[in-house]
Amino acid sequence: MAYPIVIHPNTILTTPARPIDSITDELLIFLDQMRETMIAHDGVGLAAPQVGKNISIALVELDEETGLFEMIDPEIIFRSGTCVDVEGCLSVPGVYGTVERSKEVTVRYFDREGVQYEVTASGYLARCFQHEIDHLEGILFLDKIIERIPQEDLEKYMEEHQND
Ligand SMILES: [Zn+2]
Image (cartoon, rainbow, N blue to C red):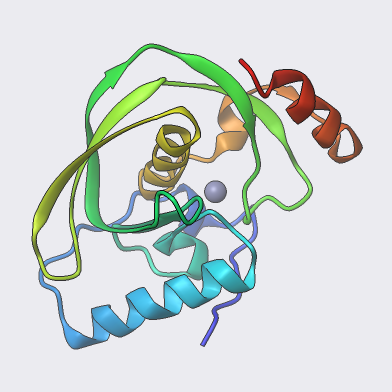
């Protein structure tokens, strides 16, 4: 079952998410439904508040190479550098803009088995982690946009900046 996406403005998108107490069967089903929802909406990341649940869960699946990250209670424990690139958000349809993010981050989270992981990422994967973890803090990329990019100029922007 894919959930409908909560669209901005909605208070759930600007409210910090609650930490997870325990990994229940219900939560595992929810994780599967979040993935279905992310795929159904053609997203590369999804945070639980975006489907109306104010709990600290985020998924990132950028491409086949990096695979799926199902993150319970994720937190960024290390950052370095900065870079600017374009972002969009399923909860803010039709809006794209450049955002400054850390170039590299280390994220600590629990997986669905309750095993703690630390993953270090850079580039667009690091950006996705930061965007999704912001959602769990009630922060939207809208608040961080430096320059809006009109949808029709997206492809051109990507081509010009692919080697940045
Ligand atoms: Zn988003």
